[in-house]
Length: 157
Image (tube, rainbow, N blue to C red):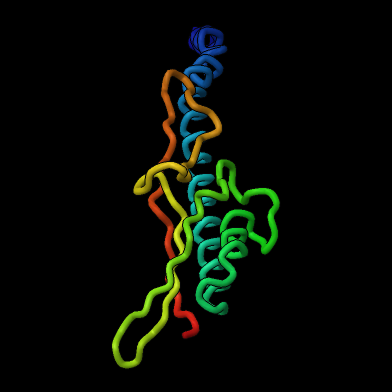
């Protein structure tokens, strides 16, 4: 008697796991997608920060007012020449002109500051992260507005 009851319960449980999986799958996919997009946003932000640092490092070896176009190429394309932008949505006009300034009094230090306009703090043209998919499972994913990315370094007098 007991064996037939267990056999009947197993027969009734057949297919329950697949139904539970089908109910949980959208949630798992959504969590995976959000994690992937967050990682992609961090990666793009780190690429932009590195390119701004490379640009200001290049300008710190130049005389004030020289090498502006090349430094913008470093920010946007990651090389001294033009090419393909490092991240999707990045344009040449989002790289602001560098600013040279004298700081301190004794000794006077010449600095150069480079800025990449982010939509979080600057007016267009500015850079913002755009997700691969704008909506999924009834949820809408908005663009992420980065703040301006700046770097300052000592330059020759």
